[in-house]
Image 1 (tube, one colour):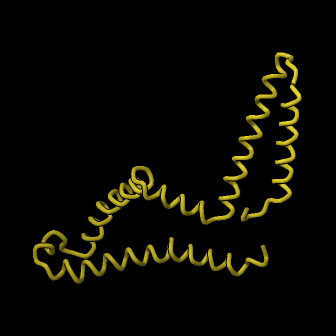
Image 2 (tube, rainbow, N blue to C red):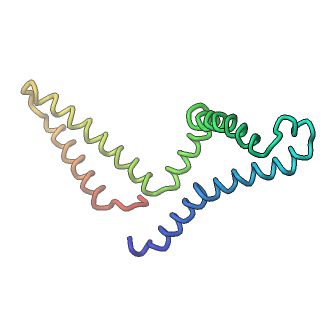
Length: 151
């Protein structure tokens, strides 16, 4: 982890900047620019928003629910978040590795379930099943010995 300290610091800086500082600064900038360049110069809008404070209050009252709904639609109702998540999993070797590991665990759990269901009523395990278990065990041992982040 010490070898990645610079990259980790860079990542935390970018997240802090993009998520918090730039977000707040962009919101303030948008409110100031739209009010003083657009609303203040248009008499009809100036009647609706007589002061900058009234504009900010109305923008917050309307904007927060509207943007919250937009975020909800992005995550729950559109395909854009699924596509984003797919790209993140495909491009992140750690996530890809977890996906592969879970596939192996499912295979192992199914095999164990089959064996336990046979042992419960005192059935015998056949030679082919024992061979299958040995192959699966060797497969898992090979997998564990060869595993790396990228494969």
